[in-house]
Length: 159
Image (cartoon, rainbow, N blue to C red; front, side, top):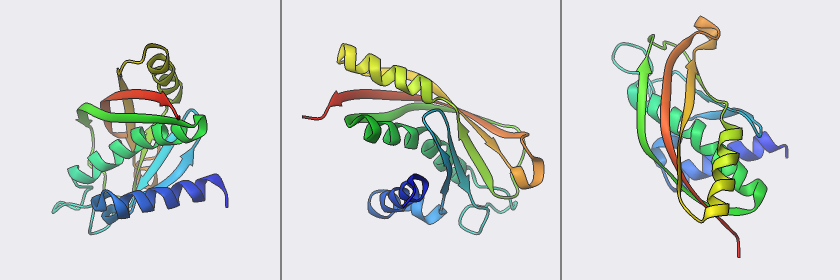
């Protein structure tokens, strides 16, 4: 089983077991590397609002996943226990997304730095990560929204 299929199964299990609202929206991981994550949120009756565009709640779920799944991925790679949460969120909504959307995080290097700094100091580290939202089928790479989430990370070596 390739890494992307495995990651999507983990995402499905996480949504099923811990946060059913994630599973209800049916997101899919399209790309997962050390530097970048791309999550696709479909445009269907569970994710759209009365105007036919993606509902704000589904946008928030996608932004959360794009930032969080990179932390999960790095924790497994490095065999670390990582406790994390988002302390705040800011969103800038530029255009109505009226088809499936992609949430893109290119903050892998920043997350690596945060993890290393937390390991070195034993402290919780807070940094803003950026999530870009596009609607490739209708608007190519044009931004639909931009999120900034303050990620709070505390890393420990597994005992």
